[in-house]
Amino acid sequence: MSAVSPICAAVTLRVNGEEHSLELDTRTSLLDVLREQLGLTGAKKGCDHGQCGACTVLLDGRRANACLMLAITLEGREVTTIEGLADGEELHPVQAAFVEHDAFQCGYCTPGQICSAVGIAGSSLRPTHGSPPTSSRVSPAVVTECRGSAPGPTHPRVHHEPALLPPPPPGTAARWRSPCPPRNR
Image (cartoon, rainbow, N blue to C red):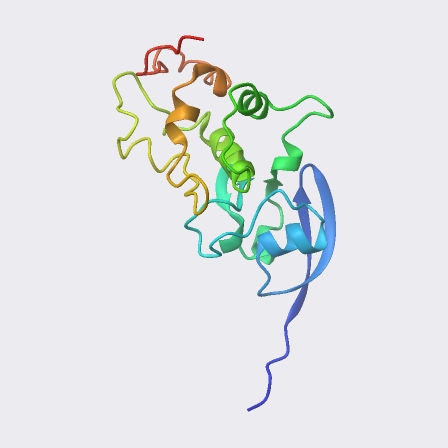
C-alpha cells in the first residue's frame, strides 16, 4: 500500500486583523494552523471533535470550533482568536469581566469560554427575562464542556452576570434582562 501525498494549496487567512499567506495541506484544520503555523496558542485542542469548545474562535464574529474548520475554506473570512480580542493592553470587556469575577476554572478552556461569550453577546441566543439558566435556549450558546477539574458548563456565570457581557446591540436593550437576582458583594 502506498502513502497518499498531501495536496497543498496557497491560502491567505485573515486572523486578528492581519493577513497571512500560507501554503497548507488541504486537510489542515484552522486550529492546527493557528497553533502550529501562526503561534496563536490561545485556542486549545481538547476533544478534536467539536464537542468540548476549548478551540472556540470567532469566524466573522460568530463562534466556531476551529478543530472542525478546514483552513483552506476560510479565505476571505475574518478569524478572531482570544489573542485578537484585546485592544493593545486594554482587555475586551468580557476578558476583563472574567478577571474581575474570577470566572476561571483550571484555565485550559477559558479562551474558548471567552470567545463563546463574545460571539453570543449580540446574537439571538442571548437569554431573555424569564429564561431559566438551564433552558435549551441558553445552554448551547456558551458552553465549553470541562473535562478536568471543574466538570460542567460555565454558562450561568457568564450569562447572568450583567457585567460579564457588553451592552446588547442597539434596539435590543429592552429584551436583555438577567433572570437571576443581583449578587451581593
